[in-house]
Amino acid sequence: MRILCLDDEELALQMLEMCVKKAKPEADVWSFDDQDALLEDAEESGCDVAFLDIHMRGMTGVEVAKRLKDINPKMNIIFVTGFSEYKGEAMDMKASGYIMKPVTKEEVERELSDLRYPSMAPKKDALLKVQCFGNFDVFTPNGDHVRFERSKAKEVSRFTPRKFLHHKGDIRRDLRG
Image (cartoon, rainbow, N blue to C red; front, side, top):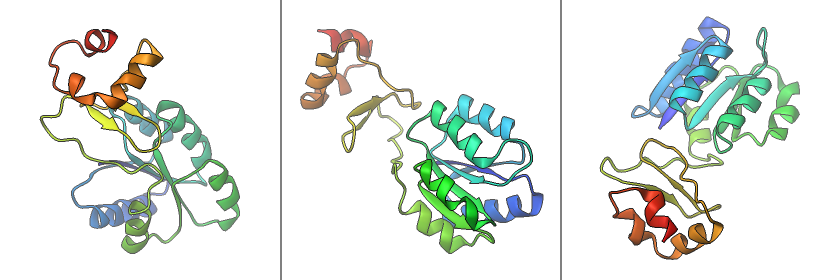
């Protein structure tokens, strides 16, 4: 699981990062004090969960969340703030969670255990990841979404996943026929 943390206050960011690492020691955790740097990293490397402070100088956490959702609509956003008046705006974003500062390991664990879009780590030798709950989606091992040229191909693949899961060639070529 890849987790990004964003806060423009150094001490709050250190506390958030520490709590996330304690709550999920096996996670790949990255911390940012700059909104643009986080967005660039998310664009390049993706992420499963983003912990975002809401009240920051420049771009707010809600604005960052909107841009993250443009990158990946199923990214889990957990807002972290010291101001309760932002809760309504945060929930309008369909956030996965909301934590009031000061952050604790227990609160982070609670939010990570109840994600809107649960993250499942793919097997190291997997050719594809198939998501069957909610929307049916297929992903490459690096997380790229597999696009089907025809809707019928996607529909058929729901019922015959072994045909393309074990194919080592061009996935799209296999799905067309």
